[in-house]
Amino acid sequence: MIRRWRKRDLRRLSRGLRFRLTASYAILFSLILIGVATGFRLYLQKTLNEQVEQDLNDYWISAKGGYLRIFWDRGSHQYFADWYYDDTDPDERTLVGEIKKVFLLTDRHGNVLLDYKTKERQISSTFEDIGIDKAAIRRRIEKFQANPTAPPDWDTRRDSDHVRYRIRGGVILNPETQEPFYVAIGESLDPNDKILARYTLFVYSLVIPGALILGSLLGWAMAGSVLTPVREVAQTAQRITGSNLSLRIPSRQADDELDYLILTFNRMIDRLDASFQQMKQFSTDVSHELRTPITGIRGQLEVALFTAKTTDQYREAMFNALQDIDRLSQIVRALLLLSQAESGQLVLQKTRVDLGELIEDLAEQFQIPAEAAGVHLSADAPRGCFLTADRVQIERMITNLLSNAVKFTPEGGRVKVSAFAHDDRIEITVEDTGRGIPAEHLPHIFDRFYRVPGSGTAPVPEQGLGLGLSFVAWIAKAHGGSVRVDSSPGEGTRFTITLPMELQEAGSLELAGQPAGS
Image (cartoon, one colour):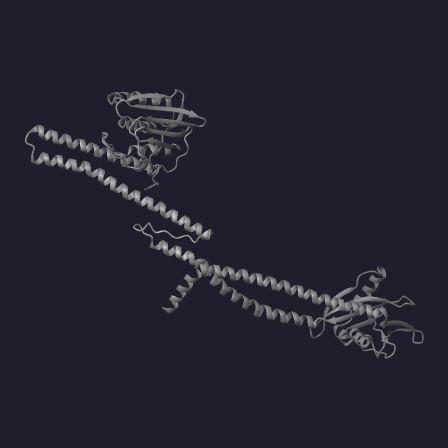
């Protein structure tokens, strides 16, 4: 059980953002450290090798410049080596000793020369261990004879103990006979290898792991401090519920990515809050609108059941109940249509519509109710103003606006509907000289079931369902357009609808001012 818990806890820890950030820091830090350490090691190795080669060049110049002489002995008929230096001078004695530590002197065939004074072979014990490559010596002599200015030979060889030596090979001429002789001077690379080994052991075994551990701890702490505001955002988000959408996350005032996340989150909560409020208001409005006709139907039936005695009384009760049922049916049909529009099930049937002809027909249909209300109705829409749109929906939109304009314009007032083409768009205007809409109600007039209350002693016309302007806004938006309202109390109202001449592709159709699916 403990092992299972540990595995589960370790898995949860490894999947955490803090762990992954720390791991990223550690991997990046380790790669940087290894890269820097490797680069410095290569630089150190190059510097040590250059120092060895510089020492060998100095030894070569010293030997060739005067300490080493090769001469022909007429008595023995052979060449000898003679070291010419002041044996009492410690500097010269030390320098010659360094040259002879790893030294070889041969003729053109690879035969080792003897010292004239001591008759010792001019080959150091180290070179005897390394071995003489006579074929390479002959090739070097031939190369020198072909090109006296050729660069020296550099080689790295090992002795029986696997110690590495850096060897510089070259040719020296006898000044009298111009006979070439091969000279090789070397120096041990063992001190350099030990320095590099100690550096590698110290840096890669101690410095890098220690720095990696320290960097991981610092990265863990830094990741924790960076993620602290994120955890606060998460804790705040957990406290937000459908009944507590007023809670907001305070900004850190740092103007960074996290503040942008907090701002985006708060705006999302604002939209959710607005959606919840609209849903609640919609539920309340629907309940109220449905309760009113149902209550009327129940009342009429109860009256008929308990008080009606004649056939006419029963007929009157049933007639009144049928009126309430008709109102209930209108509400249900309107809500069904709105639901289809919001869910994208209501597809626009696009045709080429002559808007001027359509407006003239609608104005003619409204002439009788306008005259009955004492309102002068006029239309100004030239024929040939074509629009690619759903004719039924455009008719419904204009009909709703004309119906409201005639209904809320007092006797002696005027209502005018017009349409004009501007470049790639068409503007439809319905304006009246009615009682107008107060400014505080303008932002809500396109909401479902919203009805502007009457003011003062002016008579209030019979209230509708409060869905007409919602349809207007939806139809305009579904056609890729927009609707604007300008109104002043006592002066009238103007609705301006802007539509593109070509219908834009509509996705999920939704009510203007209402979130999709609310």
